[in-house]
Image 1 (cartoon, rainbow, N blue to C red):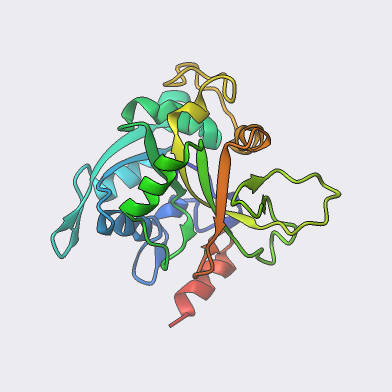
Image 2: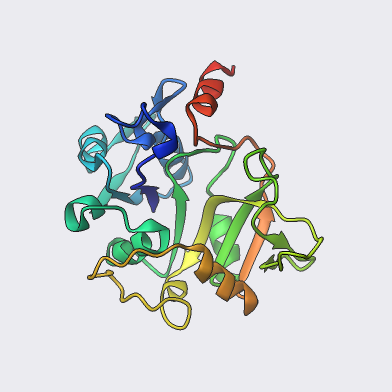
Length: 241
């Protein structure tokens, strides 16, 4: 699942007429980078959620985009904006899209994060499947805009929901993760599959509940990573070689 429903308030005025995931990074839409990377790893069935100017995303990619070199994807859309008039936040959006997602395990990432060195591979999925965990997260060294980080990593690879006063190092959630459907069901989530009422819900509380039960793992990604949250960060990406 590629998350593409946000308004992109901090990117205004660039996002007044263009959804943030369609802003160009080095010649192609920001969200196209992870979609191509997923296809290169063999993950070609995608679900994209939309809200703000979501019709532009569907018009840009359609349902069967081709990336070149024989690579293509099939896309199903979860149009939160059409259905509810606004985005449902991350957990709400995932719950809404669950009926469109195949299988028990799926990738999920934000379409407004640029991580060109990340590789989506079948061995990563198999290792997660064998682990029995509910989620596996990729964390990154803390950027300047999130100096305190989000989660810790234990010696056994467990993701840690550290108390505010814990001096252990924290890292920033990259938005890239592997999930089981079970995470989006009771007792971690009380939204019915399909989220028929359009409940808005954040993802972090679900992850923290699962971490407290030892059901989430994490590892550090040290490749290039940018949360494209401001026009300045976008400009810096586009000026980089």
